Image 1: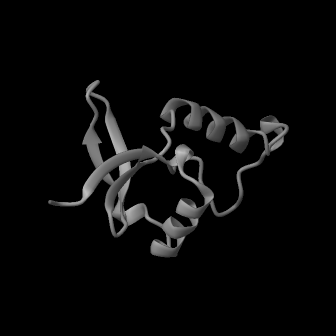
Image 2 (image 1 turned 180 degrees about the vertical axis):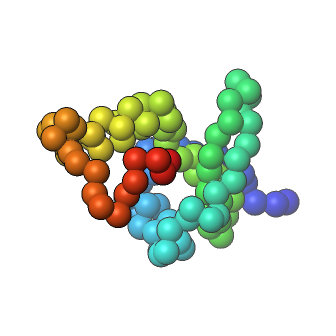
Length: 97
C-alpha cells in the first residue's frame, strides 16, 4: 500500500514540522509550489512535503491581492508629503512617459 496523503494548512503545522519544512527548503519554496482546486472550486497553493509515512500538501495562507495592492500603493505614496513641491529634473523631459 502507498503512503498516506494529507492536505494540511501551514498555520496548523507543529513547530517541529515547520523546522523540517525549512530544512527541506532552505532557499525558500517559491519555485516548488503547486496549485490545485479544492472541493469548493477554489484554487489553493501548496508545497509538497514527504516523510517516511506520509505525503503532505502544505496549503499556504491565502492573500487578498486587492488588499496588498492598496497597502503597497498607500505606503509608497506616504513617503512624499507634498507632490506640488516636486520639480522635474534636468535629465527628464516632460514629453517622456
